[in-house]
Image 1: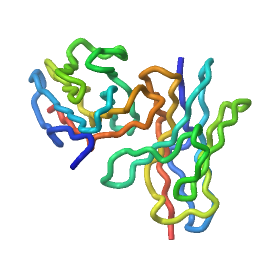
Image 2: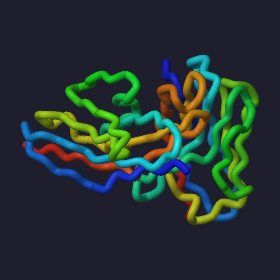
Image 3: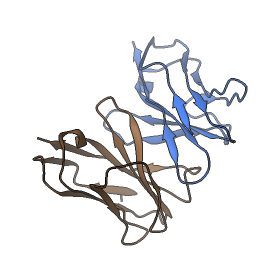
Image 4: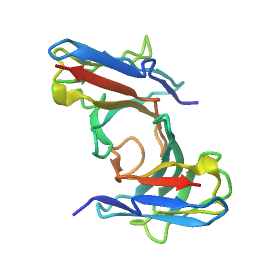
Length: 113
Length: 108
């Protein structure tokens, strides 16, 4: 009965491909996030959505497009994958805003070859 | 701009020794500070937040606005404390900014 689930857990793909990562939370939270963790374990916010609306876009390339069909889901689509996109991507949610406790998914390890 | 600095990438201590993981922040407004922890093969999870003023698993952290610090402390380290620790700052709104993280290694 996982609170924040993301799929797939691992994603290995070639440069230039398009891929998606899905995220769902069953906590009834209003706010969802995507974070990128690089090889040095640095966690950087990419996007934040509140009630299906984009609130934060942290200078992420246009190749990354988040989509929130409803407030329980926040998917991440990546076009034209590049080597530098290789990282672990974490989805998270919170009740309302970043001042609340964030609940994280288990991460998606993306490897671009 | 919100910024969080964790100066140590790795902190290695012996079991039973005191632990202090350093965190300094930069923010012009009134910050909310957090410590998150990631144990091996587990999800990133909240350890504690300054607003709660609580002790979790023996860890405490005091917000020092004068020194803009929020160091995490534990008087006696245990092997199960070994993990990656992230300090994080929210300035309100929907943005939580993390520090670079510190790996705590507790040796027996």
